[in-house]
Length: 90
Image (tube, rainbow, N blue to C red; front, top):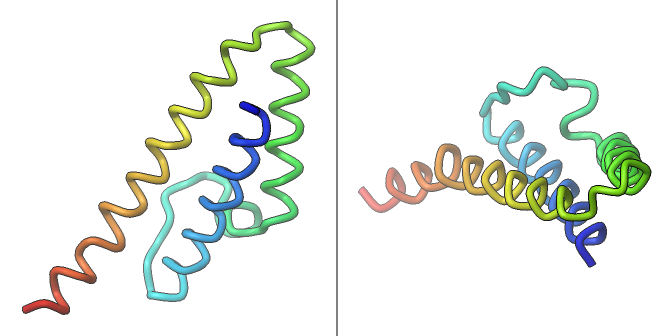
């Protein structure tokens, strides 16, 4: 279940980056531009991370990584999308 959540969180992050770039936003990730908004690349990176975690037999690490990804998604929403709603309400 944690592996599936990690994959979904990564794909949602990639989609948020695509939307953000379409709104003239910017991304601070060192993976930009070729990888961070590319769904296939993000899927492959997520699968590689899951494989590594399973090989080192640290299943609880996947929960920590999922929490970090939730933080990244929250960052995108707060920094890039909340100001759009605040500015449109003014």
